[in-house]
Each structure stands twice: as structure tokens, then as C-alpha cells.
Image 1 (spheres, rainbow, N blue to C red):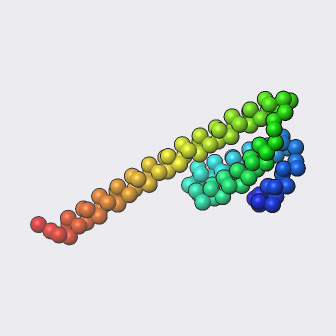
Image 2: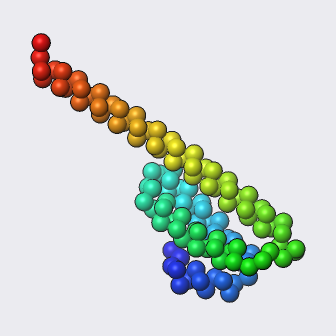
Image 3: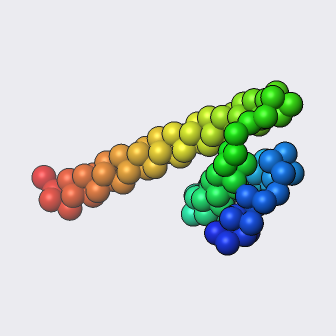
Length: 114
């Protein structure tokens, strides 16, 4: 895991050398989200944000422009997938809560009798 001091050290590393770490963190974050481990996914998101902050901390040179653009597209794709997974998870939780409420109502109706 990348810590804040380590992320600051990345500011001295060439931009494209930090991209593999950002990409790997994005994939780990998605894997955690797919497994339903949102606590881990959020921790990794924080780390990835630190790495991306270092990645975007300097002006983009012309010779880096296409690689940086591709990195941005990849980051946005990961974020879109994470949003999709979180929407699915939220819908699943809402369904479970509705089921619990219905079960509770049925139990109350049963216990109150005729």
C-alpha cells in the first residue's frame, strides 16, 4: 500500500513511471469492489488518488500527451465500472431492506392475530 509520504516521493519520479502503480491500484480496487469488500476498495481508492495526484502534478509535455490521454481514459473507465458496481450494490441492499421491512410487517400481522 502507498502511504502519504511515499506518494509525495512519487513527485520526483517520471510521470509515466508512476502510471503502472496507479493502474494496478485501480485493478485491485475493482477486484475488491467485485468481491463486495467496499472498505478495502475505499482504502485503495485513497491510495490511487495519491498516486494520481503525483501523476498529474506537473504540466503534460507534448511527447507525453497521448500516453497521458490514454491514462485518463483508463482511469475514467475504472471509475465508471466502480460506479456501476456501487449502484448494483446499493440496489441489492435496498432490495434486502425492503425484504426485511416486508418480513417485519408480516411477522407483526401474524403476531397481532385476527
